[in-house]
Each structure stands twice: as structure tokens, then as C-alpha cells.
Length: 531
Image (cartoon, rainbow, N blue to C red; front, side):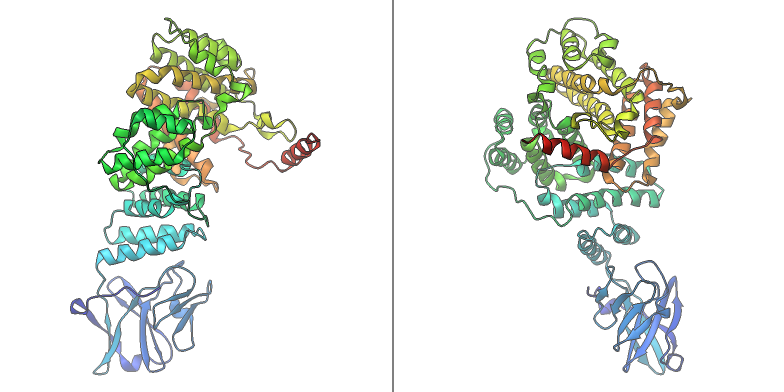
């Protein structure tokens, strides 16, 4: 990696030390807040930052070999002081031009233009994606911040570099990015927390596309029509759906011009375990936060993910969804709470379909039931080493009922005609999850004095989540954000206390993410039944 260039007319030559003071041993000088290491080798003088860009150890304690190859002895990173290349390691080393004049050694400590530093940091940031060097990603973004750059440029660059590597379209990496950007804005005045938010976005994009090939999108364009777009998604015609997205973009459409069609396609089925609608909502938020430069890649990702979404309402477990939607009555009243909590899919959907005259009231009942279910989740299922595949249930099955519900409320407020689909699909979650709850367990220990304060604090604490899996951290942030948003939208709702308790239990209970023994037993069972 080559050294950053500088306009020599703006050089700032500084007298560092006398020529006699620099022998075959390195010297360290301090100029302003810079600590600079100087080396004499083969008749040349080299000057560089004394702190290794990897972890900050002093390069003056390193080894110079081959004339100009400097090795940091802590982790064996190697730098060619002549060319500026990093030979082993990642980050580039800051070098300074040096010369001898009148028995003195002068160093040019002028900085390259900020734009050049930012461009170099972006290039280096993308360079470390394949090896997923998280700490290096943070350093490169910190270099952008150091020169007064907007770190959102790193998010845009990461998105543009990776969006074609998502074979099946959008993932949680984009969806949770909207929430990370919300936290980023809220942490104004705390640079470390802001850097964390941006690094998490960029690193998740890198993780989900690590060493992936590109899956280019079709280039054709046709006029955008919402009905035609929904129909193209329904028949899983990616070429037609993408062509309409491109056509709309060519006409200058913004996200909201596509919003209704995307929402209708997302709710056309109980699909992708609720992800589709969540992705539509969060994509809209993300583009609003990250800027119009992100519109095209986000829309392409969304369209592709809608085309490839699984359609769970077509499997036997949720076969009651279609008839319930067709039989929607919309009578006054609210569903029976007992049925919502543990009635099973068919009973729950039939109960919801009976009511709907006041969608907001029905929604409140459904959200309250989803909160109760999460608070009373039976952990035995998530920890089990035996049982059929259909009982592979864990915490994230329950968090999705709430984050999906949050998306339903917000999207259906914009498009009220979609309330029946949204409410019934929340019912699909309730009908399925009810089987995996235990209403007899004592949950009092999880209740807190200030529900909204606790939820808001939990959301902010995700900035130091400590989770290796990005998907887990994403659900911690998505859930706490959704609960805080719902509490603020319904300040008098009865589910505030159990909602905060459910989040508290989730954050402080085992989250078993790998099931080696159960997987082995289920593998034997499936293979045995193959005949």
C-alpha cells in the first residue's frame, strides 16, 4: 500500500535533530503530538510514525532488515519504508519525507489533504473485508473521523462494495443498520460509541458477504407500476421486478414512490418469518439516514429478497391463514386473550379474523399476547438435545413476533388496507409460539421499576453487546428499539411492565446458538426416514 502523496508546495519541514545524533540505531523525536521514529540505513534516512498502526507498539523497538524493511516485533507486521507498502499486516504506516541539510535532519510533517486521507481509509477498509479484520475496520473509520470526515461515507462504501454479493437479497445487516444509525445520532458527543455504531454496520455487511462472489442484477428497465411489481414478485420473476425498480429510479423516484408496492409484496404472504416487512420498514429508515446514494443498492436488495422469500402460509402449519384472510369480518371488539396466548394457529387466526373494526385495539391485544409469550417462553425447548426439527425453537422465534408487530403497526398506519394481512400474520407468530410457553413459571424476578427507562437503557447498552454473532446483537438491538418505540407510541398500554420484563429475561437467560448433539440425532432420524 503506497504512502499518501502530498503537495510539496505545502511541505512543513521541521528541524528534528543533528545528523550526528542518528547513527545505525533508531531515534525517536517528538514534533507536536507526533512521535516519529528515524532510521539511517544504506545511506538513506527514513522517518515514520513510531507507533505501529496495528496496536500502537513502538516501532523504534522493531528490526530493520534488508535495508528498509521494518518489522514490528510484537506481531511481525512488516513495512517497506522505501515504497510505503505494508508487506505483512494490514494498515498502512504513516511515513514522513526526511532530508539532511547543513548537518541537520529535517522532516516534512505536513498532512495530505483530508479527502486523500479519507479515500485511502475507504480503500483500506474494503481491503480488510475478506479476512474480516474487525479491529482494522474500526481503525480505518477512526482515521476518517480524525480528519473531520463523515463516517457515513464508510457505510455507503461498504454497501456499494457488498450489495451484489448477497445472493438472495437483503439480510439483517441492512435492517439493523437503520437502528445502529439511530443510536449513532443519539450518541452525539461520545465519539467512541459513535465509532462503534458505524463499525458494527460495516462489519456486519462484510461478514454476511465474506469471500462471496458477485451476483449482478439485471440491467433492463421498464416503467414502474406497483400492481405489476407485486405480480412479478408473486411469480418470483426477479428480472421483471428489478427492471421496474430500475425504471422507477431512472424516472427519479425516491423510496416512498416504491413504498406501497414493497409493503404489499412483503405482506402478500406470511413469509420469510416476518423478515420481509421488517426489511421494507428498516430499508426506508436506512436510506433516510444514510442518504440517497444508498437508494439504488437498497432497493435492488429488497426486490431480490422479496422474490426469494419463503412463503410459510403455503405449508400445513399455517394453512389456515388464507381462509382466515378471505373470511375477514372486521366486527367490533377485540380477540380473546386466552386464545391469543395458547390457542394454536387455526384458533388464533379465526379469532383475529372475527374482529378488526378497530385495528389499533386489535393490534394492542396481539402485542400484549406476544409480550406474554416471550416472557413465558419455555427454555426447555431451546436447550433440548432431542426432539423433532419442528420443535427447534429459541429466543429469536419470540423476538421476531414483537419486531414484526412493530413493523406491522408502522407500515399499516401508512397503508390501512393492509391491516388484515398484518394482524393475521402477527397471529401466525402467536399461534405457533403458544405451544412453546409455560404459563406456570415464576417470572416476577424479571420485572423492573421503570419499564421504559429500562428498555431505553438496554437499547443504548447494545453498543457494548459482547456477542460474537452479529445476528444475536442485531436481535438485541432490534427488540429493544422496537419495544421502546412501541412504548412511546402507546404510553398507557398495559403491556409495558411485562414487555420490559420479557426483554430483561431475554438479555439475562441462556442463548444456545449451536446444538451439536440435537443436530446429530435429527440427522440420523431424517436419514433413517429417507427409505
